[in-house]
Image 1: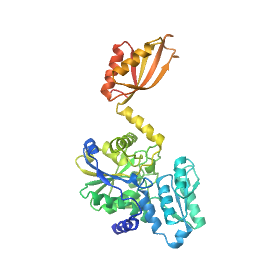
Image 2: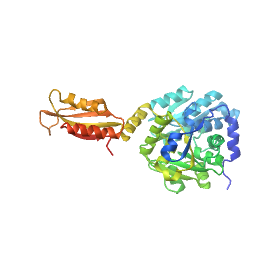
Image 3: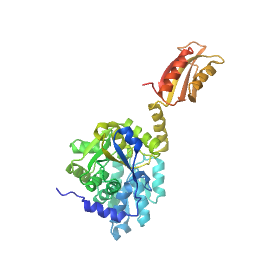
Image 4: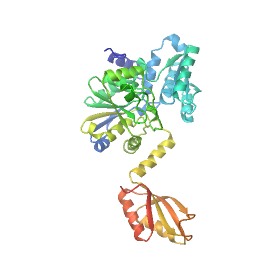
Length: 403
């Protein structure tokens, strides 16, 4: 079967965009290799100017426009990375760009897209409604409609990620790739030849999995991996993935969060949820990759700072470095001082104290104190709880258990 995109198309895209996007590094991670049991190399696409691989496909598509199409301008629908990629490269090329974004799009993404040079139109409660508006605007204005993944030029541009990875690390056994609409994995699979490709989706949005099974699109839901939260995979991309018999695995939200935290703590880089999905696959399916030379695509780093802060705090709780204890104390001078002294002697650092006096199930001269404490590891928690109990206090672990 003849695919809609060929290796020659990917090679042509590589030549077209050369010098206009960053040739991001692919480097070995010794620590993540030790953690996962695989030989892990990472492609850092979060280092692109707009912090996402989307620049490759957007630029290749823009470069393919005729002079007349450039004069007419372009319109696209996106709630995030594709919007910024189109805005940035359209401005560089002198092409007018309009981006339709859902009304629920976070303000920082809207502002960033606008700063990069695009006109932003907010319309619709979700991407489906925004997409319909973008198509309507394209028909009515003569502008070229840019699709974020279901386009042969976009697919070819995204495939250049694989060319660079295999040029840097030729001996890779498998490439692990986040999948939303399927543009990245389609292009990379075409470029990679005989190298195995494994796609990764959040189990909240298994759109490509469902498409390959001829099942209805997923209902979706809340996910930290909004960059791959696509309800319906592309027509062209599904055709490519099915023809090349690419395997797609799903991962939980917890493993995506863990992967974000590992990238930050170990590699000192920021990964968005979608960008961390490939590493999440190694955490959730270790037997699939153990002992193999694995290339991970860290596809993007655009994550809201408040969300990142929440992920960090949750990671500290999950790994036993942040614990909240609820302790029964007498409501009298010196009781709290004695308790905090025990915490300090055990090596804990109190970062929050909540004194709860209005507990009707307790005596009037008693109170509960919630202490949120930084500790080195779970062993410190066990020691801390033991010392508090030995001092005669009743204590329960509220968050950050001893398991």
